[in-house]
Length: 131
Image (tube, rainbow, N blue to C red):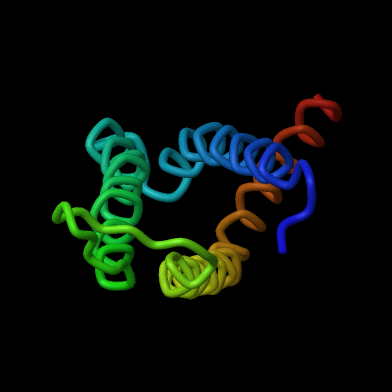
């Protein structure tokens, strides 16, 4: 059962996540891939937002809802209850877990890169101070 107001809290959390995602994409694209093809890489990184929304919300949720719904006398579909979207939530949860795992993998793989960037900036600051 949902708690009262949980839709508002969920909407706020999703909005914050989208905002952080858009803000982090700009420096991540330039630092990880360079600036030579920055526009192309940035657009590919941002393309997943509308594409994922279309695939998950439009296609997947609609198809799975129709599979759970019963046909009415007038030819439409109806479904009442939590079971209508249970499989959709499971698929989306699995997609989120896979995405989180890939984020962890990316942070592990880029740890040395950011260590080098931090070390070079630190050495530049100390050389500027000593000069």
